[in-house]
Image 1 (tube, rainbow, N blue to C red):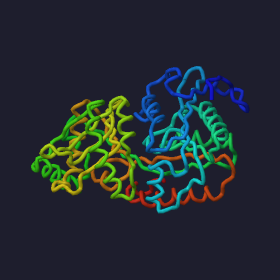
Image 2 (tube, rainbow, N blue to C red):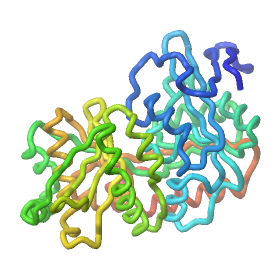
Image 3 (tube, one colour):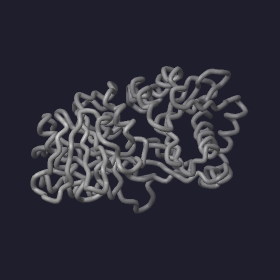
Image 4 (cartoon, rainbow, N blue to C red):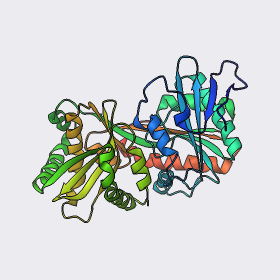
Amino acid sequence: MTATARTLTGNPASPAVRWYPYVGDAPPDTSPAPHPSRTRAWAAAWQYVTTEQVLDHRHLYVTDGTVAEAVSFYLVPGQGSPYWASQEADAAVAPVWPGTVLYCGSPHAEYGGAGSGSPALAFTTATAGLELADALGAGAVVYPGLDHRQAAVLADAGRSAAPGQVLDLATDVAHTRPLGPTLDDWWAGIPARHRRDVRRQWRRGAEAGLTLQSLSGSRMLPHLPDFETLANSTAARHGTATLYGLDVLQLLAEVPGSVLLAARHEGDLVGGMYGWLYGGCLYLWAAGVAYQHPVARSVYTWLMCEAARWGISQGADRIDAGRANCRAKARLGYRPEVLRTVVVLTSPQPTTVRALTRLSRRLGEQAAPYLGVGAAW
């Protein structure tokens, strides 16, 4: 698809759009990305991943004269996204997609939302995405990692483009909390009923000789094969195989603020957290623990506390502990934030609708104990 500009039919006020085969060819965005997974560096990296089976990619540059940004789409086989497959496994449902799908971003990214800044931008994004899906033979356009506002505006836009073929579903939970200026503030934010036990595990890790090594950007590359082993063995304990490929970890090291926080014991890597220090927030995206090591029982909690300490030392005022493992994160004082996925089907697919609805319902049943009384899913 060549880089050609046009105004979409059906809405004369729609912003002009231009398609690019590579995101680096598009003009700059007008505003900084709100999260690491919305940066150009992430979008560029995802063009080359193989862990998620990207068959094709296109990048929409959309502007209304004030706001301009690139919105990246990736064509993936129905069973080609390990993170989406992990959600199907968690929900104990069969694979949802009958064929290829077009992801706006990726389920692997905690946060999406590109192209949702205004109703006009969302209409343009949804209409162009649906036209691209038709051209590429995808059965759906999928927008994961949305907050409630983003989901609402993209779902409304999708209904204008594909009446009766849009779902707005809760599918995940992010976990965030403030850091505060000192580690004492961190401890104070842990629920009182868990605080003593968390501090005890942290002390045990320190007394066992655990040390933290921070490795930023390219400095982490030699250590990533060992971390990949830990991260995937940890994912396998939760029923998911090969969630984090070495290709993904190496490519995303190019995203601004990338860091590997490595827990070492006598020089050995016994745990790690891979993420980004970005926009005043420490994002923890992937974790791994050497569960067969004698100090394994203390590693996760020790590392979560040390990550907070490191973030404070680097000037961060927030920490984002990623998705999954709701129980452990609730013990540490993280606040759950429901994330949504908007699905725009390219044709009536009642079986897919039922499967997606069942997926969301079962994931919600698992998350409910950690969302608070009366919290909406």
